Image (cartoon, rainbow, N blue to C red):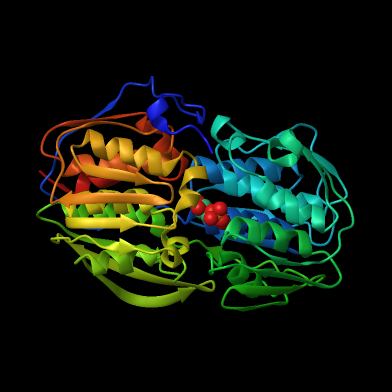
Length: 448
Ligand code: S3P
């Protein structure tokens, strides 16, 4: 486990530094109007990777412009997949069954755990040699969760501490399909094994304790692969062709969560967020917020490229505390920091349990939120697997630290919108990892 932030040891340093000037933020009365959020990060990574493996040319619209997805794009480029255009619309030409190009240099995924783990699975099955690394945060995150099952399939992988940490080197080659009973619910582990199993003759089966986000399964089905899933089990029959099909990436529900909570905790908000992915494996946070008394309505439900999409309508709401159980965590894994902010603005106690995975995200998010909430004057207790937050309907003006973690930075910025005075966020620039232009996007919505 990494050092908690209280030790003042930023061993998890990401691509930005907290030495940049802090963001100075004033409280606002509300967020009003209609807006959108950037394309979903998880779907964007998968569109680039699966598109690269398809037979033919395809168009991707509304790809996330965040730094993490740019890392995937850069790596695919190094692996010999030509990708043209940027953001709104890009085109790529997949390699079909043909091998990827052996990269001439190290593949650097920056801060992106998804890029690292998905590519490790893919590259294990390719007849090429590759090395993968990333920034300080990435190099401190556990990689044995993918290395272990990939080695069971026969993958040849070397890395620090016997493959526990990046950098890792992979000599790809023939693998054998396996059934893997994963001890953790993880879409990254699931997708790594599916990507390794794509080229094999035989069935790769992945079973997880709870269903994690299922974008890979949906996109593979959309592109014609032979894959069946039932609750938390996925079965892939290897060797099927992936058809090139245009993909429109819906808005990122995890990014929308910052706007949703911003609208809920400010007093005069009426906000619409259009075109958001409402895949049930991603919107657990909306169910939790509803339980807390939030007014959020889903309008115009539709399906876009195999993913459910809707418009969200949010109004300022008086929130109450709740208990978040272990089985709910996979459905809101990336939203716990912003749910902590909602809990601080709620009245009553919120208990979060079964969230130990948060300790190995871009930062130790349990420790990072505990220290930031305490800085806001909130009574908070840190547990090994979660937090206990005594909500008192608001927070004091504060000076918070992002710990180089984009979701902590964005959560602090949202808390500052409704704090009792002007606040400061140190290291806020890392929000560009997932939500570039967040401040510019909310500026026209602000009621001051
Ligand atoms: C992701 C899966 C989740 C999530 C991450 C993105 C993905 O990680 O936290 O931000 O795109 O597959 P785990 O699979 O490790 O839970």
